[in-house]
Length: 216
Image 1 (cartoon, rainbow, N blue to C red):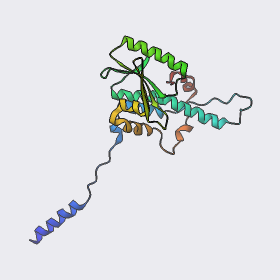
Image 2: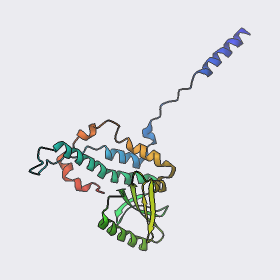
Image 3: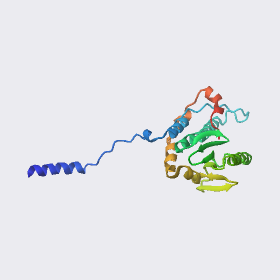
Image 4: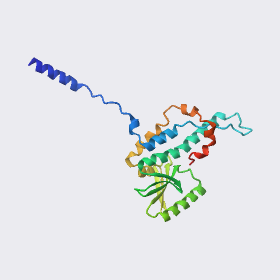
């Protein structure tokens, strides 16, 4: 009887200890398109050119350098988003339109911000999208912008069979329930409080080939 009580005590003690789960390596959860986007965003930035203005030269060099880097990061984000879209059935095209999903029959012109295009540029893009829609009537043709007004979650309007989607409306349309996970994962390319990557520069060859990078 004493032995039985002793065994019961041992089993009870083991049961009371919390089970320690093995750590999850998040890299195994990241899909190829997202990983490509993260690697792209983490690439060293090209160097800035010195200010040429006779008045401003030597006065705001630091501001100019930071502004240049931030603009380069924003420019790269446009391309990075395209990589992420490939995890959701989209193919990179970059000819009239940016990406298409042959299964969902969606053709996208992708913008990082609703303010990326001025009025003339948007009209030019609109005309191209209308032509694409006429030639591909089965496709839903979308002018989509990742970012919209901060006080408004999103917007959706249809003009001449072209869908204009902005902000959360657009992100929910593409990613559905995985929207927040996509955003949070992409944000890991820029660790909070860590600006070390801003001080890393590529070589001048990279700077000369800036035109080869995506520019939204």
